[in-house]
Length: 435
Image (cartoon, rainbow, N blue to C red; front, side, top):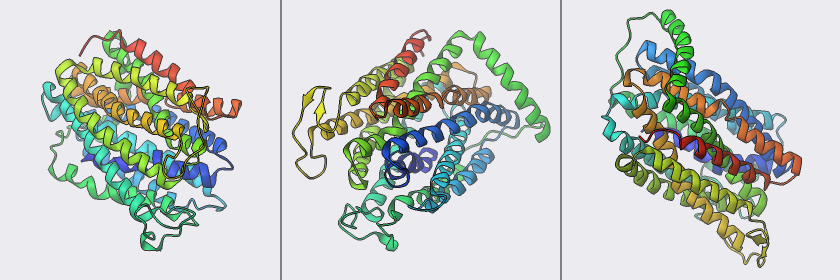
């Protein structure tokens, strides 16, 4: 249920509703919106790079992981709720949106470190893939349900004033003030508060250490240095963490800018983006379930490599699209009306569904791969290091996308940058022993 509780923040805020709203309604223009969102994502990545391994090591020293998840959840709740106040035309709307998003991202990602560290204590190694994949699939389902709620009952089209279900927004939400988009912050906060409860009530935690908190913190800081040294001596662990650093960086940027790209290039609004998100989430759920079983059957490495190759090809496909052409040079007819009325829009939709199908297996197999590589009693510090490897340069791909977008004044610069990141990540992973 952890993944279910967290996913609306990623689905509604990071990707499909609030991020495009920021680019379309708050930022001066879509290009500036993509750049600003990229810089906020980069800032969150820098903070995560510092916090994750330290807190993971401290959690190992103290024992239980639930108190850390609760603390992160409180920060996530407050920062998500703050997004409601990022109203169009507001004097401080842009900084409120960017700070709320960045702080919430840090909180939810740090919470995931402690959640992931519980995996080796819950099931035997031969079931790591299935547990991780099923958790990811349930998370996608949570994103799907929350997106249907927003699309069908809360977020209205700015022209018609009605939701996708053809009704006026519930609770009197004002379409002109984009309250249906802004409500995604408070909704994500309340959703987490409710659905994280089963983890606290029914899941076994790790026994508390006899160390005092002060001593545990000191030990945690010291362990960060030793963990990095251990990972460097263990060639497979070190190489895997380096590869994860690169390809996770690209994946974060791909999700961060997917909705913004659709809004900027094709002019998609809440309805188009919402349906896109629903379909992508469906394929993501199926992909995560299948990927977890492929992981247990063939190993995590083939699953991750296959996903990387597919994502690089998808980025190339996105790069080839424009408002009036596909495959770089093939002109297409003007939009025919209705949802996804042009050929480029349909192709972008299809590519998005492929992203959904392989992103879940990529992330789920990454955490199951590390769980097989390291001792269960030290899972926290190594999953902190995994978060570090996934976040230490997580500012780099968004920063590269933001900078390239700004320099070349085109959103097409984004997917071009990400192809290189996926390629390097795949080459590094090939040297890791098969697990």
